[in-house]
Structure formats: C-alpha cells, structure tokens
Image (tube, rainbow, N blue to C red; front, side):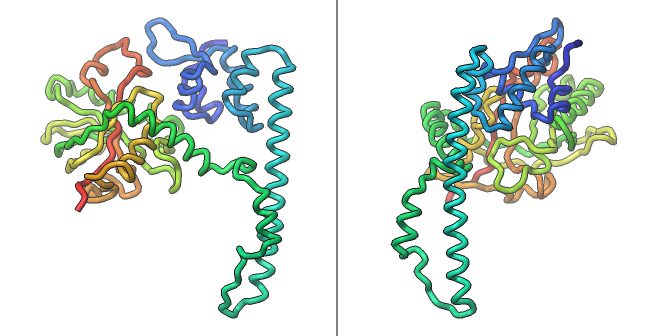
Length: 336
C-alpha cells in the first residue's frame, strides 16, 4: 500500500486534519515522514489503527482508554474498559429514563392548568424532589459540563502563560482565497500560495501578512476553535496590485484585537482566549461583528488566525507546516 497524505486520510475517513494531528500529538496515531516532503503521510498500519480508533470512539470509549487498549495486547484490559463503559451507559440509561418520567409528569400536571395562568409549584413536590436528588450530573454525559471542566483546566494553563497581548491590526488590502469542502484550509492555502509564487509578491512586499478564518462559521453554539466546512485565507498586497479571477481583492479596515500565540494543534486555546475576552479582563470587551462587516461576509468568522514568520515559512521548501506558529486574534474594544 502506498503512503496516503493527511488530506487523503481526512477525506476517506471524514476526520478533520486537526483531529488527526491531535491524535498524533497524544501518541495515539503515528504518521510517516517522507523524504523531501513536509506533510504527514500514513502507511497501512496507521490506516488500520485509525479504523480501530474510529470504531472505539463511536462506541464512546474515551481516548485515554483507547490508547491503553491499542498499546496493550492483553484482552483482559479491553474487557475491563468495556465493562466500565457498559456500567456508565447503564447508569445513564437509568438516569435518562427517570428524567423522562419526571418530565412527562410535569407535562401532565401543566396540562391540567392550561389555559389558566396559575403558578404551579412544580419544584416543591417532595416526592419528585427525592427522586431528582438521586440523579447526579456525572451519570449523564452533559457536553456543557465537560466543556466547562476542560475550560477551567485550560484557563489555569493560560493564566500561567500570561501572554495575551493587545494589538492593533492596521488597514490593509488583501488577496482572499476561500474554499468550502473537505480540508478547506489546505485548499484555500494552496490557491493563495500559488498566487504568491507566481506574482513574486514577497519581492514586492516582504512585509506581507497571512491571515485565515472560518468562512462560513461553524453552527451556532459550536466551541471556539472548531473547524468549519469552509475556510478563507488572506495575504496583504500593494493597494494597486491586481489579483487573478479565482481570488478576491478586499480591503481590511483593521482594528483592535486580543492576541495569543500558539503552536499548531493548540486550537483549543480559542476557548481560553474567548473566555479571557468575555470574563477575565477589566479593560476590554468583545467587538465581535462590529465595524468590520465591510471586509468579509456577515456569516464569516470575526476572529482571525495569523501565521507568524510567514516570509520565511513560505520560501522554505522543507518547512514543516505542522511546526507553524499562529497568533489567535479576537476582536475587542475598550469598555465604556
């Protein structure tokens, strides 16, 4: 079997490239480096391992346990983990069944008072309260609870870094490349890099900046940092420069941003940065969607990702894109 690229694997298994990079980062899914080729590739063994990971994830086995199962060939360990998951599922089924019964009871009791506007004390029934007290949120896999736990842990990490900067992005004219579909970041980047090479842009403008963002935005309520089905990339250009038809020339009006530098695979830090903007600073607040509506579509992301050291990266034929550093940029304004 010939080696498959990260893009091919992403399309075949419908797994985002960010997820694949994360699996490798935690030691779950190894990749193979080809000589004179900077992107990840995967051999037959890696493909088989990914199939196993996907199966176990669909069975709701945590990644930490999957790592142990695939590392140890002892079936006793797998049986132990599977039994633990079954017990957790049984608890969840029981809890959900109880919740369903209580909600049906609420509906029945509320139905008795419709259309009268009576204040029925649903939460004062001692018998129901005793049943509800037996329920614990740990028995139910609340996504919000998990997200808050992860966010609290990550916030501690971010507070230790203390590296959030307040920066002003100046106005600039940009060439924009947008792609909607599988592995949208890669495709949008390839279109833009082709323009950069053919135009000799870096000789004309060595201070060119490279910026990307989700376009369109992921569904409302999705956690910050979640990849979208579409992605847009910009490179700043001289104002008088023309761009080919498959790109769009735009004007970015600039603005104030909270900036936080990351390495690739640290996109979970978007949640940290957003939490800092919304809750953890006395001087600034979110400027999401304000003023900047002229430079890209209203449904596109207002938070940006700027590639650091772009000038050197784009000219290095052996540059490992997985070692790229980025600035996460969240739009802000001064309070009051």
